[in-house]
Length: 347
Image 1 (cartoon, rainbow, N blue to C red):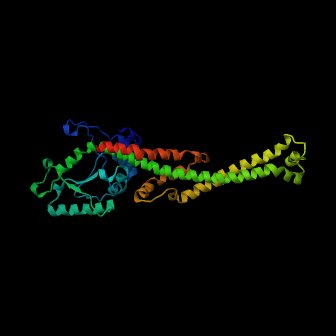
Image 2 (image 1 turned 30 degrees about the horizontal axis):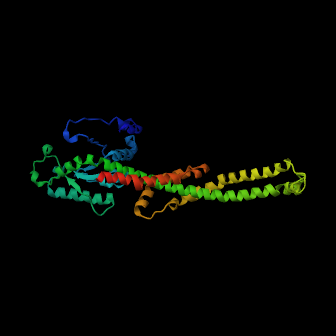
Image 3 (image 1 turned 180 degrees about the horizontal axis):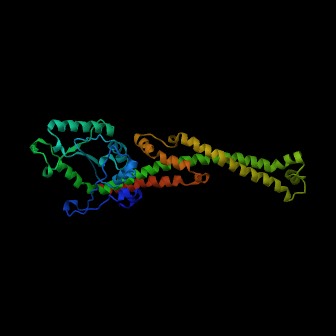
């Protein structure tokens, strides 16, 4: 599962070390200690995109434990980016738990309360919510250097361990959640693409009607115009049809007019009409889909860049792609098969 991290370079992969532990409690479980968050070091200084790597780890995880020290209670810039954007987008807020560890390093209860209050305030700013998520308070009694009585300190170590041990049991549910999220992301991009191609076909139809109308007109009367201007051809198509002197030669010039008009119409559509459609669409891409609830608005904010990129790089031939059929298959899976899997999981 870690092969995909090779693309981030040796500055990351050189620090990935596998350690096996012979413990029944960790059977069928892998614990990933991700690179720590820094304040003074930028992502480029690490040699890889830290937030992107963190997001990849988050996708794999059934439970994400964010640990804070009492003396660095969420004041790091990267922590803000991770909690506010990266982790919720890549995994979901329900998989994230917060822990203030090493609380025995606080000098007294007042010091602990100040650290805890600071972390709670920072959490409210980072999550953007008034309701502060539960923060587990814990320390390791066996390695504590504190000389103070352990009775002074709150301890949620057992509850935290139970939470971690329960994580593997949620694996299938999380897989279905990931499928659900990714399919909805694909669905909204497909909806935007389907609407864009629909508009493209409608615009093409208008251009085609005008072009064919002009082409038919020039096919019938184009040689009449050239005959009046330069006396060529000597016999027009209409006059040949009225008389008895019709031959294939009478069709050459009308066919040239017809083909040239059709070709010119296609060139104009490619060079101007289709490009104007792309520019107009990108100026207000949210008009492509219905944003009737907050979930779809958040989903579109996340996926609009992908949809706009596809539209920006599209060609005229792309307006004939079968996005409607693909969209129908996605909806069928979401409304049918996926619900069946959830029902089987509950039973």
